[in-house]
Image (cartoon, rainbow, N blue to C red; front, side, top):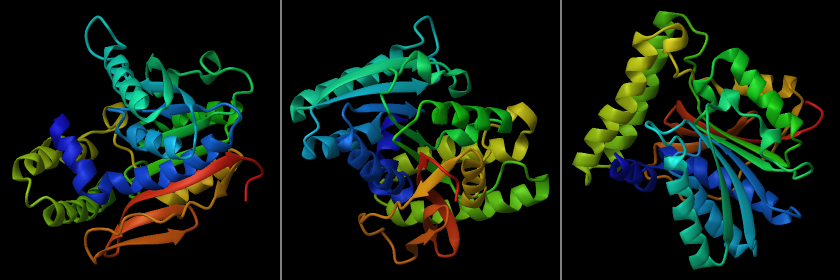
Length: 287
């Protein structure tokens, strides 16, 4: 599973596009901050942070504190997975001259209270990559309100650009088929040299998402993606202001892949099907 995810990140733009754009914004903001504090909601394997650390090192940042939030690991040690991520990031930091201190928080994002972990006035940058769509609507707003209350310098949001949230069953199925049909076409073009990993990616990653979207309702459905316009409306209503997010990234792998810059963020599209949107925000007067 880990090897397959590594192939997904490195050989396709489906994840790397979001990481590249978000990291460019985060690195610029963290390099300008008096102290570099990053709150990462849904840190996962930490692969995005590895690339971010290289960018920070190039910019001369010498130390970063990372509050890493993710679901508890199974078993008696809920922080085991996060500590392993921290050990790997610290080792990378030593090799590139960046001191890393990771604060593991093993709890659901909707239970996380930033003020318990962030020093007053720290002005953190906040990264939420492919995570907020797992929350129900009241929790989604509550998490964003808590983020705003800690006065972040920057919030970066990476989300699939498709609507599976508050949508009736048949329209949800149609959108699911169109979106993941495009995703599988991208995989077909990028992973022909990796058939074993491709099988795992299609079944264990995206296959499970498709099943959850189509076969589950209420709290059992945790894949609740939304389009960029809905995220724009929600964040604006909560008092966030958008920032330009465009930055040069590696050319996508196929002429059918293109980047569309619109209100609500930069979106990677397969032909006319939007795949993933990256946006950047800060607290301020909504626009």
